[in-house]
Length: 260
Image 1 (tube, rainbow, N blue to C red):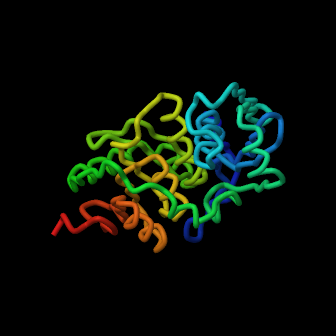
Image 2 (image 1 turned 90 degrees about the vertical axis):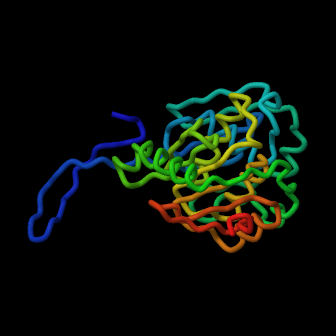
Image 3 (image 1 turned 30 degrees about the vertical axis):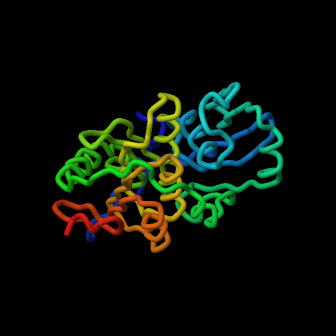
């Protein structure tokens, strides 16, 4: 049994029949990140790829820019704690002291995010042409990989891709967590993200979009909808944003003039 799934007894109702059955429920796991022995935040997440989640989150929030910024990282899975040590103590203290929230990353996300920062991100330096047929194939591959969702119906997934296949795939109860996990893995593996595609199962909010923009991701794709602000940011920064990719259909929200 996967550690991110728990069996629980339920009453199942089908029409006029009621039966007691065992069902699989996704695990919600409190994961607290400490920076230089000072508590930063508790994320509610799925208990997998925790090192990747910690690193991806810290990079998204601007506390680290590369893995070399981390002097040491230790994960205590029993206690649900990441101990991370970095050199920029003053930068950490000034920006985050006293700011702590608990989040699954599916609602408003973290308190650290400021939407105004999104417009300070750089224009995409290496735009990438979109092959519609390849996007359809990637989403089909993506859907087949969603084991946690298929088992529980309670997970989001994200992937980092070449245009011809998935490189990194992660699932989590929170779509922001899943995104930070793939970016944390890319950070650990030293992957260049400037020629990659992000796939997501969930809504693309402005915060999700800007996390991709910070890594110079040229194409962001989702099975679900974007928000209006994420579309505006994508247009401003030159990111191709694609939503509602289902079967033979998709909506292209930005940089779509080349498709006419």
